[in-house]
Length: 360
Ligand SMILES: NC(=O)C1=CN([C@@H]2O[C@H](COP(=O)(O)OP(=O)(O)OC[C@H]3O[C@@H](n4cnc5c(N)ncnc54)[C@H](O)[C@@H]3O)[C@@H](O)[C@H]2O)C=CC1
Ligand SMILES: O=C(O)CCC(=O)C(=O)O
Image (cartoon, rainbow, N blue to C red):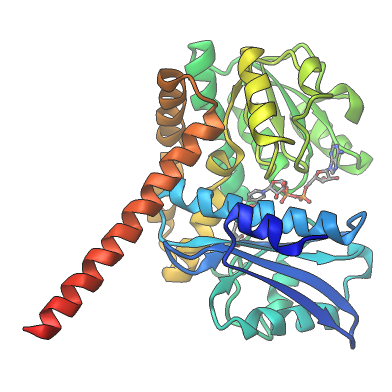
């Protein structure tokens, strides 16, 4: 494997391979870009099929975090970490060891809770490092606010494509009923939407059926349902050449990171099918916005105001994509790259001004 090939192509600054013996721990911390500030990104734990898959996940997720922060207009960079392993074997010692790896980066990387990690796990990691966010008694776990942001983004997409702000009777298929998916379902239900849901966990589907009167379908059935919106809230890579031809929804708006299998080809296939895709790293920025606010001293009102802005940002991105005839993914990357370039220019101006002042 040519290790530097992907890293160079995707523009990462640093990738750390954490290898511990006692306890046995293998984790990858990927820092994509710190132009806007320290890299932020939560940690997930998964039994990856192989190490290349884990690396790919860390690289793509961390780059997504750079775009996420830039589109949300908050001054942090992009990073992400994956712990390789079955979460059933997650011990306190493993979390402490992981915390020491995070601490060794001295604040270049600040992390929190992602898939298969709990607020309690974050607390354990925080025994070894202060570079942790999403601690329950500070801003709380990020999932409720991520769910609310996804709901607002879904509303923006429905307004843009279906020309209605009334969600009464809107048919929404939700894939993944975990921390975020449950919150998305709650908001949709409260606003009169009709839910079709799936999860690989029977316990989760039963609860959502009981709470919100949702119709439960098999995981393989979720793509082909005759619904208005598909909301992917499980794992990434689910929008691909196998699933896109099945999709009948005209809007895709969900929380899962890295939904597009192949960004360009699959993004274009959605456009050709007339499906409006809300880029994942824009619509699911609520958690990042919340933990960023925790880092700088939590102010709920300010955090909520920034999350509310996801709605307007998405409308701007849809508009930009339509005017330029590009995918929504390309339009949001354009926005992010403009903001990063502006920040870099501003830094240059300040450095030049500083050195000029020093000379006088
Ligand atoms: N927690 C947060 O604040 C944020 C989460 N995200 C992303 O949103 C997604 C969901 O996050 P969480 O809800 O926190 O994770 P979670 O682990 O609480 O929930 C994921 C759910 O998806 C289900 N699932 C897994 N594979 C599935 C499949 N093939 N079909 C149907 N269901 C399946 C799981 O059983 C679980 O209930 C992830 O991709 C995560 O990276 C993004 C931004 C912030
Ligand atoms: O919880 C965090 O540390 C930042 C949020 C995040 O990782 C994400 O949005 O995927």
